[in-house]
Image (cartoon, rainbow, N blue to C red; front, side):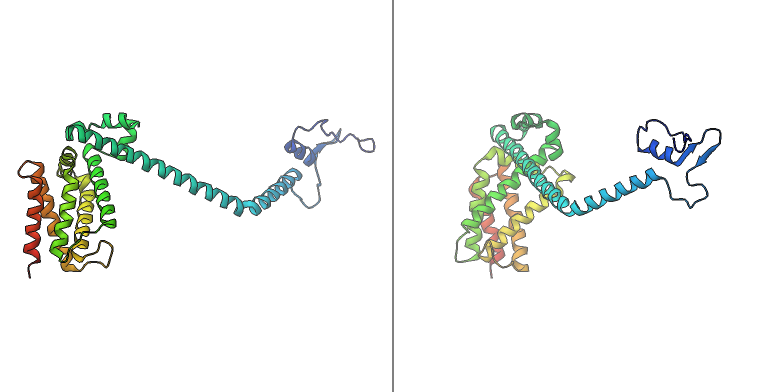
Length: 273
C-alpha cells in the first residue's frame, strides 16, 4: 500500500525467482497489469541480476582457489595411481608365484587357471584380465626367471680371460638355473613353444633380453658399452642354440651337461679366428 494505492504485491515470496517476477510485473486495482519501469530503459530482471552477481562472485572465489585445489587434486590422483599400480603389480606377482608352485608340483597340466586363482586368493575374472591363458601365465614365469638371472649377473658377472670362457660360464650358470626345477622348466618351455599369436611379442622380448646378456658376456661386462654388430649376431645365434638344446633336454633327448657342452661347441666354432 503506497499513498493509499494497493500495488498488489503478493504477501509472501517463496524464492528469488518469484520475488523477481513480482517486482517485474504488478497490477494496480482497477487497471491492467503494468510492467515495472514502463517507458524507461530496460534494466533487466532484478532477480537475474542478483543471481548473476552471486555467480560472478562464486567464480572469482573458485578461480582464486583453483590452482591450489588443482595441485592438491593432482597430488592425490598421483598417489592413488601409484598405490593402485603397486596393488596390481603385487597381485600379478602373487598369481605368477602360485602358477610356479603348481608347475613345480605337477608340470604343465597342473597349472589350471581356476586353481591358480583360488590359491592366489583372487577372482578368476581378475586373473583373466591380466593373463589370457595358461601359456601367457607361464611365459610371465619365464620372464621372472630371467629377471633373477639378470640380477645374479649384475652382482657376479661371468669370469674368464677369453670371450669363449665367459660365454661358457654364462651358459653353465643359466642352464643350472633353468634345470634345477625340471617340472617348472618343462612347463615354461612348452608354453614358449605353443605358438600362440598373442605371445609372439613376449617370446621375442625374452629372446632379445637373453641375447643381450650373451652379448654382454662376450664383451666382458654385463653393464658396459653396447656390444658391436658382430657380437650381437654371435649372441643371437648362441642364444638360439642354447634354447634349442634346452628344449631337447626337456624332451628327454639328453641331460643338463649336454646342453652346456653343445652351446660351448657352438661358441668355439663361431669365435674361432
